[in-house]
Amino acid sequence: MNRRHCLIASLSLPLWPLAAHAQARQALRFPRDLGSHPDFAIEWWYITGRLQAAQRDFGFQLTFFRSRVPVTQGMTSAFAAKQLIFAHAAVTDVANKHLLHDQRIARASGNTQVDLATASEVDTNVQLGDWSLRRDGGTYQAKANGSDFSFQLALRETQPLLLQGDQGWSRKGPEAHQASYYYSLPQLQVSGQLSLGEQTLPVQGRAWLDHEWSQSLMHPDAVGWDWIGMNLLDGSALTAFRLRTKDGAALWAGGSLRAPSSAQAEIFGPDEVIFTPQRHWKSPASGASYPVEWSVQIRREQPRTSVNVLESYTINAVIDNQELDSRQSTGAIYWEGLSELLDSRGQLVGRGYLEMTGYASPLRL
Image 1: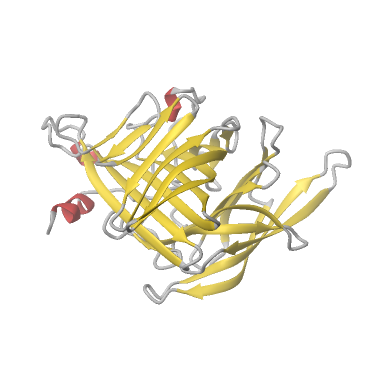
Image 2: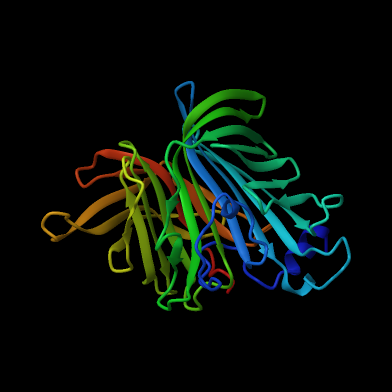
């Protein structure tokens, strides 16, 4: 068994977002809560977006996961893997209908002299080898070097933090304690370089950042989830998600919508977000069948009449095959890809990312 497999085998907790239990609720404090929370079981920083270069479109993803390893916390060795850091990076080449992706894993003992991976508790500054995500003032610097692609991007804030759920306390299940701390930064303005093989392209675009952390596992009846984070063309930001049971029914749902001129988001509860699959694509690699076109309905109360109406959107993947095999790091196969948001008239109103997990196999609970 090689070193990577030893690290994966040492985990006693799942390594995925949308965990269901968080510690006793506390108010978020910034910039402290932009950094790592090593006392929590699971945490991730997640950036996705659309890039443009020479009239070509690309999607990109860079995600850093931190997982606390309970069995090593009392060890005094400088080599004890008290935390594990994972990273996923991907680029969607829309014109060539091709997805490139890579992954990394390393321990974080707290000893910077021996660690290949670190996650600052002061501010966003996560590093795994030559992959990194760092915040400097109002700009994030993201860097990833994959086997056949790389990117170096500057992502500038254009809007304030979006606190998901109740002031950053985001419910993930029917019990009150089933929650995570969760904030987003939509509408990030992106510039930088993207390299594909021997070709290096200057790029610009829009991106979305999520930071989420939680204390324990997904709800025991959940096998996966569906999530969207969409930057609307008018500057708004739409989030919607649902956790699924094994029969495909919604166990829990939620989301938010924030207007470009507002600091506060409209928050949606579990009865106000409805995901309905429209078209499926079957992966030739895993055999999993993913809904690559969705109808998403949001139940909103009209401010002047207090009448509830359903607003309908369609989510379309820009290419079907955006499946990622992360079994060499976090141990799962999932779908994560650049998608378009259409309104009820079929007009393009936004772009962003769709994530679907638990279709190849249920997530480890």
